[in-house]
Image 1 (cartoon, rainbow over the protein chains, first blue to last red):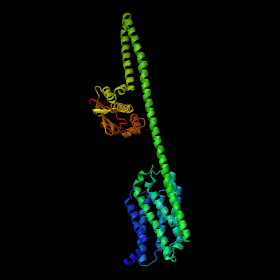
Image 2: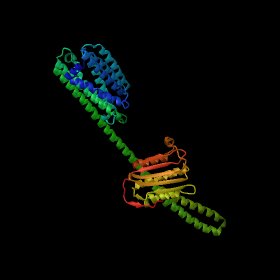
Image 3: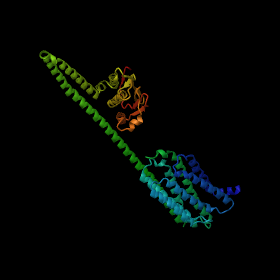
Image 4: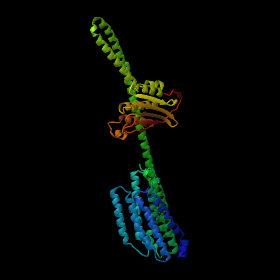
Amino acid sequence: MLQRLYEIFVNHPIDLIAELISFLPFTFGVSRLKFLKKGARFLPLYFFIIIGRDFTSNIYAIKKINNLFLYNSSAFAEIVFVALLFSFEIHKPVVKRIVTIGAAITLFLSLFFWENTELSAGILTLSRAYALLVVLVYFNQLIQDMNVKNILKHSLFWISSGLIIQFTGTFFVYLFANYALSSNTESDLFNLYWNVNQFMYMVFCLFSTIGFWVSKYDKENYT
Amino acid sequence: MKLYIAVGTAVLLVMAIFIIVFVAYYQQKQIRQQLILKEWQEKYRKGLLAATLQAQEHERRRIAQDLHDEIGTMLSVTKLSLNQLGRTVEHNDPGSTVLVQKTRSLLDETIANVRRISRDLVPTTLERFGLVSALEELAEKASNGEVHVELSCSDKMPTLLPQLDLTLFRIAQELINNAIKHANAENIIIDLHCQPTGILLSVIDDGRGFDLDEILKDKKRGLGLRNIESRLNVIDGHVTFDVEEGRGSRIHIQVKNLKPEVEVEVEAV
């Protein structure tokens, strides 16, 4: 069993790095929990779910069971956590309501695209489109409010930047997942797109870690 | 398809990075501008406060001069006339002599009061001999049978800027006045020391103290304390109130010595 796991990681080293790197934001998030704002407190839980997903996914891979449905289901978690993260940070009640209702609609629509044995282009694209819109709304609020003294010491700026990079970097890959990440795709091509996806996730993890690190300045960072 | 995905991803990524950089840059720029604006407003407010205090001093000087030159002179002339009248009355109407003497003593008292008010309005000792001498005079004037005011200061005091001298003097004046008038203090110590960080002035009394928060909350009261804070604000000074109801007060004023010049030997009292 361990031999099989070793073989998987030798063949897919980026996957191993991406799985290990999840521990970084998780550890920092937990250690900085008392500094984190309400919404951001859910993020370490998200990383914990991702660690759990990767662990389960490895066991399935060892047993040669299809594990792609795990990635489809984690997209649902992404939608929920993005909604939780930003709904506490967005002040305008109307926008807040739009974010919450948007999450509910995205979750509902995603159900129609559910696939057990393939990565669902519909679910993954919808979750990314929703998250991108919410992050842009938050950036717009940052510019309008102008209440952050030093943006580079603002935790949610780093987390949002990580999210936007991850989601824009993987948007087209998932939009054409039926071509790029299907079971019929050539192995090399699949690996290429999968590695892009993992690389973008690593960027998100690093940005989130910085976000958690600077969260200690958040309290005094408002005008 | 491969090309579409690559180009699409690249375009979206560039857009995302552009948005992130734009948000960070724009936000920082705006915040910097806001801070500059706040700094300007603070500077303007301080300037306005300084101008108000200066105008107040000018007005005091003008009133003191008018009192001394016009009313004082008029009273002296009146006294001269009264003396002449007294001499005449003494011969013709001895019964009115008492009335003349009474009027003369009232006039003397008025002349003394006018002089005192005029001196209080402009601290001439401060201008002529500096802060230590002015505080000595203040302590001496405030001391009487019931109140004892003592000055304790460093042997060597640097010459301060006139504005700093005046601010510290006015604050000491206000605090001593408060200690006598409101706290019923019997012993007051004015402590003036030069430290490497600046000048430290402390006024310590054994009066009945006061509740600082309560006084500052009430807009009608605490005008003197607010005035002290305003004066210190202009010269970037700092006040610490170590006060409590039922015990004496310790009020410490710390200011930066903006222009240390010649050191003056002072005999400690």
